[in-house]
Amino acid sequence: MHKNMRILKIILLVCLLVTSCQTKNKDTKIDVETVLELPELPNILWLVTEDMGAYIPPFGDSTVTTPNLSKLATEGVIYPNLYSTSGVCAPSRAAIATGMYPSSIGANHMRVNSYTKERGMPAYEAVPPFEVKMISEWLRRAGYYCTNNYKEDYQFKAPVTAWDESSPYAHWRNRAENQPFFSVINFTDTHESGLFEPYGFREIETRLYHAGDRDYNWKNKGASHANNRMTEAETPVHLPKDTKFDIPPYLPDTDKTRRDMWKLYNNIGEMDHQVGAVLKQLEDDGLLDNTIIFFYGDHGGPLPREKRLIYDSGLNTPMIIRFPKKMHSGTKDNQLISFVDFAPTLLSLIGEAPKPYMQGQAFLGKYKAENRTYIHGAADRFDGFTDAIRAVRDNQYKYIRNYRPQQGYYLPIVYRERIPTMQELLRLKEEGKLNDIQMQWFREQKPKEELFDCKADPFELNNLADKPEYQEKLNELSGEMDRWLTEIEDQPNLDEAKLIEKLWSGKGTQPVTSQPIITSENGLVKVTCETEGASIGYKIIGTDGKTPESWEGYQGAIQLPEDSKLIVKAHRIGFVPSEVVQFN
Image (cartoon, rainbow, N blue to C red; front, side):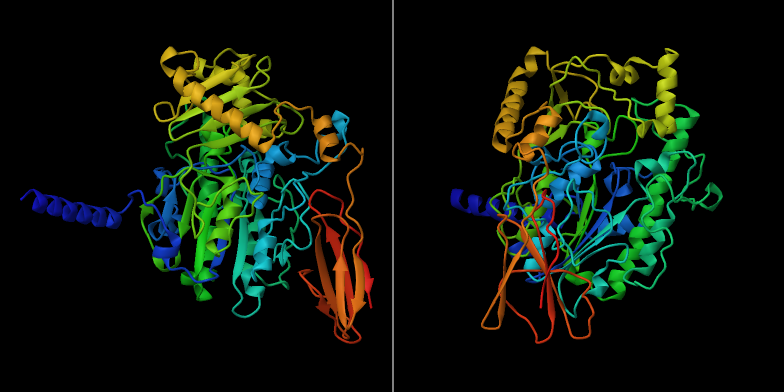
C-alpha cells in the first residue's frame, strides 16, 4: 500500500508538471536543444528600441496599446529580468557586441570619443583583448549574412569584417538565396530626445518601409537624434493627450511631466507600429517560423532619474523572444540576464561554444549555463561629468557602492536638461517645492554603500545599508562585487587619462593595425598581419571592375581569378585600421 501510494504521488506530480508547462505566463526553463527543435542554423532577428523601461502591456503597463509587441509576447516568451550593464546606450552596446563588461575594456565612459578635448584628453576607443571579435563577425564566419540597420555606437569603430552591411538599407533581403541571417534593426522613436521641445517623431523611421531597397532616397540619412523631426501637427497620435498617467514618485506631478509621459507612451505606440512593419516583412518573406525574434531595449527608460542611473529604472529593460513555431508561447522566464550574455547566447543557439574570453554566459541553446545568481552594472562619465558607481543585484536585493560619496548624485548634463520634466525638477528645486523623495537625487553627498529591497521598494528609495538585520545580505553582495571587480580587472574611479594610457600601453597615441602582408604561391594568395588578433577583410575586383559591397572575412588562402584584383584591410578592435592594400 505504501509503495502504491508513492507511485500515485509520482503520477500526480508528473501531471502537475505537465499542466504547469501548459499554463500561460508561468515561469519556464527552456532547453533549446531538446525542446525547441531549432534549425541547425536558425535565422536571428533583433528588434532593438532605445531608452525603454517596462512600459508595455506584456509587462503589466497598459497605458498605450502595442498590438504588435503584444502579439509577439503572446506567441513568444517574456523576460522581465533583463539588465543592461549601464544606464546609457554606448557602454551597453559595447557589452552586447563583445560579450564583455564595458568597464573591463575601457568602454565605460559615455562616449569615449566625446567631451575629451574639454577635459584635456584625446579621443580614444575601447581596446578589448586581442582575441575579441564582434559577435556578428563570429556569426559571419559560421556562414551567416549579418546586417545592422543602422545605429552602431559600440565605443569603438567596427572592423569592416563586422557586417555584410551596416546602413539604412541593410536588410536580410539582400543575402544570398537560403543563406541564414542575423539582422539587427534599431528603432529610435523611443529615444530620450523624443521628449524634447519641439516635439515630433523622427522621419527617418520611414526607411523600414523600404527595407533593402538601395534605390530609395532616404532624404534624412545620417540625421541626429535631436534633429530631423516632423511638426507636432504631423505627429501620429497613438493615445489621447488627456490620458491619466501614474507618475513615478521621484518626478513632480505637473502638466509638463504629464506632457512628457504622453510623449513617452506615444513614442512607444509609434515604435510598435514600426515593429509591426518589420514583422510583416518577415512574414511576407515566409521566414516567420524559421527565425528567432528578439525584442529588447538598449537600457531603461528615458525620463529623469531613469536613463544614466544605476537603479532598475536605468538598467532594466523588457525582452520578448519568439521562437519558431511559437514554441513556449505565452510563457515567462524569470531568470536574471545581463547584456554580456547576448553574445555567448547567440553562439550557443547556433551550436557553438561561447568564446573563452566572453564574460557573459549563454541563457539559451546547447551551451546554456545555470541561471545567474547576480547581475552587475556600472556608471562612470556621462558626457562632461564623471562619477564612479558599481552595482550588483540578485533576484531581490541591489547593492550599490559609491566611489565618490563626497559628490552628489545629480550631474548637470546639458542634453538631459532639454527634457521639460528635467527643467521642472530644477525649477521646483530652486523654489523649495520638491518633496523628500524627489530631493534624494539632489543630495550634495552620497552614502558609500546602499542596499535596496527591489521587490518591496521598486523605485529604490529606502536605503537599508545601515540596518543590522540586512548586514548579512549587504556583506554577501559586497563580497560578490569584490569578486567581480577582481575577475574583470575593473578599477573603479581610475582617472580617465590614466585609463587611456593603460589602453594604449603607455605609448601616448592610439595603436595602429599593421599593414597586411600579401604573398602568392602556387596560385593561392595568402594574407597575414603582424598585429595579433587583427581581423582581415578582403574584396575581389573582377574583370568588370566592379567592387563588391561587402568585405569578406579572411579565413584562409584565396584562389584569385585570373586578371582580377584583391584589396585587403586589417583592423584590430580599438586600434587604427590599416590602409587598404591592393594585390594584382
